[in-house]
Length: 217
Image 1 (cartoon, one colour):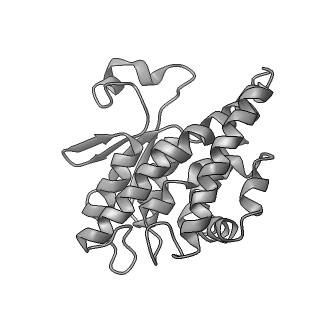
Image 2 (tube, one colour):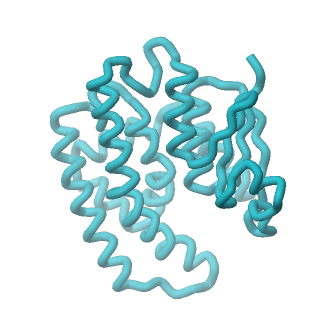
């Protein structure tokens, strides 16, 4: 099997999502770093792969895909691991997983990303946190987590009885949110807390975290 390539920036939410999927499927990859600070993502060569200049980009032979959730879905279908694949083979169950991936994209990610910006990115760059924005996004995330808590009283994972891409897609935001005061929103919900501890302890995710932590040094 040819080695797959992933162009990305360590620490970016989208790159972390794609890496997690690749590691879950135990694929041999060549990671090609793209420096966003020097705007390498806006160079002609990279734009030929990702027309909007966003990381990551996944290459598998003649196949080139951008957008991290599309990469995650594609990998799940092309490289299923028997008993460990991040999808269900039954179409109805695939629909359930797809629903919760979309929930993460449209309901969970927007407030989570804004909270990470306010609580981590702004202070790191010497900018003041907008406390009103934090309160607004915390309220939105609270409503989402209430839905998750109810869902997880009935199934071990969001997509059903096994870990799937519906869970994996949350990992990058969870990694950063757990380092903020927003962690309390997860800890106070019994089923959400157990779910977080479960998916964040997976060996594939630990490999991603190790890459991110080493890049900080």
